[in-house]
Length: 481
Image (cartoon, rainbow, N blue to C red; front, side):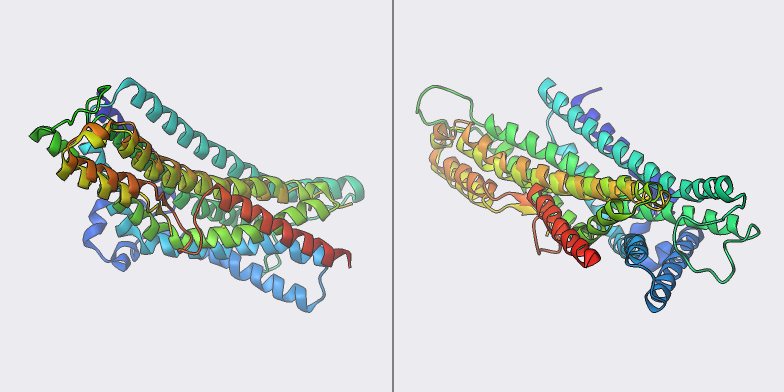
């Protein structure tokens, strides 16, 4: 399989893996939906509407329990136990709405990446190695988040059975409890209705995790291949002027000038891809950044203050999932910024000063453009355990978002390094200017944003952790007082 075909095939596999999760939610991306409005695309998706109905039954039931709990004087611990679960359900509704809203833009984004792949030259052995390592990283991210999701749901799902066993062992009577505090229009603690309520809650938890994570999976997939395209662009730019250990002016022939124009065109397409990602994910990134601090705070608080280990432990996977999810979003956002600005370095290193005057101007404009980052504009053992997987899942989810954001920053700035390394000083003066502009532009990293409030990078992840810790300390202080 040739290098170009390999990249196309791996991208198709990554999208297909995301599609499997979307198919479960009945939100699978379909090229035919381009010709339809958003409402026309989803109005007859009965499986989607049924799932959303079940999820919102849980949301309404949790809200009713919380209101009743506050009015009847439920303990602070019980109210905090409910807070992350209710918050997650509300966030999932918002995430789902934004994903459906941006369906057409998502299809445009995927098509733009495929177009870029068709414009790339044949991959070298080192390119293939990097590509496979990036795809391996992507698959690892999805596997880790999937495992934490399963752990989180399983931990909460085991609470009723553990409680049932302990109550029967201690008192000889069976006590039917549910994983989450939800009010139903029937008595869910009797044997006749308990199985229905239990299945509903586990199914709603699964839907919530899928809705929370699947849009992030697509973000990771697109970021992985955008980062790789920045890498290819950087390498092509560094080789635009043949290396020679002298300062003689090098006049680009017509073929090389055409290749240089193609490089500039590819760079513009890459910037457009990141802009499309910003349009799709800026709102959800903002909610992830803000809500993750709340989720991490409450899940961490529950895991540490609930005396019953069996109730606290399930929040650890939930915490890890949320941390990893926001981390990898920030990581890939950071990588996009870095790799986008590295184009400026590539301009500087390509011996642009040896080019003719007209080309030097183009180099200068390209370098100036790269100064602008591309970005996306975070005693009862059975009660404590469930919050540990929940906390773990929350941490993992936000961690991976930051991770991919960071990767985009890194690879976008590497274009500037490629300009620097390409013996630009040997090009004719006109070409040197183009190299300079390319290098200057690449020094401003491409990056993802949270609705333009903040960049998505690893620094964002540390700020989210810092904010979560502050909220946690305040919450614990309130609890002690």
